[in-house]
Length: 549
Image 1 (tube, rainbow, N blue to C red):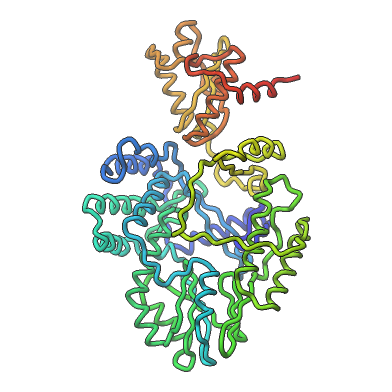
Image 2 (spheres, rainbow, N blue to C red):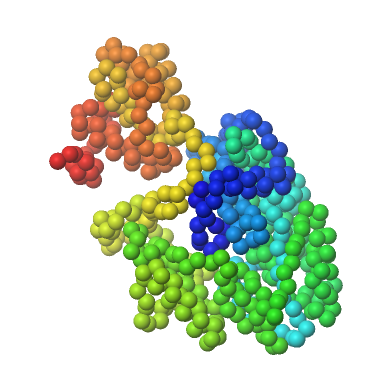
């Protein structure tokens, strides 16, 4: 089996039984309850009912936006932590097609608008940390240490955090109906905490769903409540001068003449029975935190850029068939970090040599002049709004097409399908062909005339609707109408239904459907309503070049 490592942008090759045993070890060592029944259909009904009842936050005409029309159970995979002893996994749960995914995103958006977290002890990134450390006076007895929260998401207490959310909404003067709807969303999102593994449904008894868009916000709500309740007392007791947290990684500077790290960890572990912390203390006056190597002198903190021992210099190669913007994104990041981290001369020169080596190993030309630093955008700076179009990049031909729009207000974004992740992906769970959504074609078994349609639900659900129209002599289906008029039979799904392309509901799905209807129309083979078909220069060009020479 081929999979990604958790850190270092490297690939791990290992036997499938070995990989599966690591997944099973994670499941066995955490509080999961298994079941043979997939609750996705039941959960979907609960989500639909919740959205229907949310009359304050969701207008009736927008309900469809937050319903995942063809949901499936979340699935789990593991990224191998090759930098840790015994190489355990970092679990990654794909929640994108879960019933509550869209509602979870909306919940996060609404809570951030109505009752934002204060973020008093958080840092956004390494650059913000460096800015704060620059103004921090250091004495010889000061010591650096990092704390890590063990399995953070699975140890956030759901019921207790609900009370914190309710109190926060009340303190922010959120209207009663709005508050009750948000609390109802919270309940249903946190209860749908499950995933599928080897045809078994695993429920997490407590904690937050891994992969849910709302889990980060909810975890922050609980952790910041703990910090505001206890941090002042602990800082005074242990003379903690500075405290910074980035998600579940904490950096502290404390007075080692007054306390030691073991006493600090003991007190942190007593804050809540669900939270457990591990600690790492500086070694030779140096501590690695995030992507920084912090070296404590007698008066200040010097910084260098840190890379784990398992780091590889792999970025998208210069000669790969990817958009130029994608290939240079990593390069811009490397130079931006070099120029904004305020490194001293020795560390700056060392990092510049590493960057040049990375570029050389990935066939990039070495810049002969300094790369300008990109301005960091702040939330207070108003940004112009643009209309964006998404193109799948296949080569220079895509660039020729998108260059046409350079002088317009339309902005181009690219995506690629030919990535190692897609090519080497291990398909943990194959869904039946007809359980997806997308564009389909129904072929008359007698004359082979074709009807092209789309569905955001499962293909076999749409097939059964066409079949019902045929049996009840209902002309809602143009396909069924043709069969009745011509006295042609209705065939089995596997024989008459062809899946053209998988796609979720949305504008892209509409375009794909229109193109394939146009294709059948130009071949004089369609059964769709002619009034829905109009001339299209782009479709005409595409169908022209699809034709055999």
